[in-house]
Length: 123
Image (cartoon, rainbow, N blue to C red; front, side):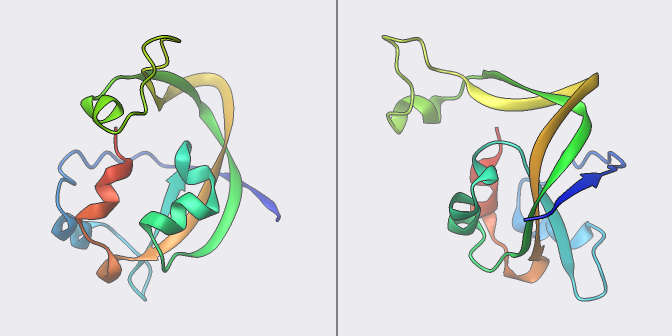
């Protein structure tokens, strides 16, 4: 697969807590929006488990961000993901960092085909 360089204009959408909020996002003329994955969505299989009808799955470089394990959520314990013995309890997040670059995935979804299950990937 070809690798692309992403130049991202950051827009924060803090109120995307329900699928209807997607209607307010800008998209192309066919109603598609691009999603960037930096954790479990790096796997096409995982991405398709959340977005079964995704298209145009590809990799890209995202400059100005870094990954870090800093999110602890109850779901890690209720789903048996956390391991207290090895202290593996934090989930992955990304934060702005001027001199860093990370590999991400980018894929397109139709806004009309989404529902609240997409928020399962949010920290």
